[in-house]
Length: 330
Ligand SMILES: CC(C)(COP(=O)(O)OP(=O)(O)OC[C@H]1O[C@@H](n2cnc3c(N)ncnc32)[C@H](O)[C@@H]1OP(=O)(O)O)[C@@H](O)C(=O)NCCC(=O)NCCS
Image 1: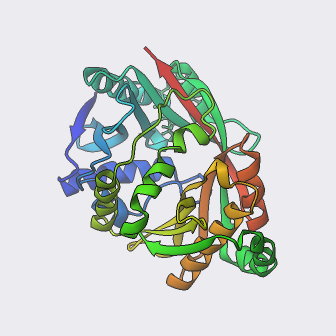
Image 2: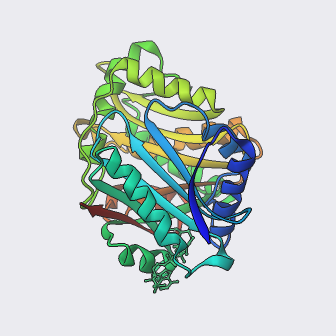
């Protein structure tokens, strides 16, 4: 008899059992599909001003055999939530995944969330359990993305030639910082962040634009500092002093061998000057200089995002998985 129970992330033994299920369920995937224990141990119990997190476990006797995660954005898109289910590989096809997702949907509905989003991961060009499972649970594919990985060796072999190309962006000043945006650029940075939802290809995903006040940016930065995450950021400043583009690479103190690209956006008014390339070179160089043990970075982009894909390909990123963005509306 399997019971579904809420897990308190501040109960470290329970959180560890929950984390073990996710690690086992993702062990066969390429790249870095699951955080290290030290990352989850710190990040999951920490307060997060951007989203509420609910963890559930499927418990059989004294063992956890399934793990579920629901995140609910708190600042905008209050009609949405994201649901994830993980089942220990020796206990799949018993209906545990279904019970986890059903429970997460109940929690989401209880908080007025009518659009549930999720993700499925497949070998490039292939298929897999998570896609079949998503369809069985009534989720539609809203967008197709590629998860890409860059090894530092590949990057270093290419960077000098790319730097020549990026000199087309020389009219802009590129500044870098760790997590905390300089006060003088905060308002302009917020304006650019507000464009994200309308500028990033979202496919059919039902997401609305967000507003980034200076207070909101500062709260989000503080959260990253609190969990030991360094958002190594490059920002392009136009001749008139406004923020024309931004890109970042995130590295956790607990896992300095691995980095993840966060956001990248260039203001439409400043496109066509190789700023995307210049910003990514700046963040990647900064990450290499700051973390001598860095081995790889990853990123994900919509397959239709031609411009970003071209930049990533030039940097040496290779597709390792297909990511399906899923959505179910009540
Ligand atoms: C995807 C996953 C959660 C499914 O868990 P599960 O407990 O095996 O799922 P269920 O037994 O509840 O399956 C429900 C239905 O999904 C479909 N399904 C699940 N796995 C399937 C598979 N490997 N092949 C075909 N259909 C599958 C079936 O229709 C199944 O119903 P049925 O068994 O009556 O035919 C599990 O394989 C897993 O943990 N995978 C790794 C993590 C992951 O990718 N999670 C999804 C992203 S959130």
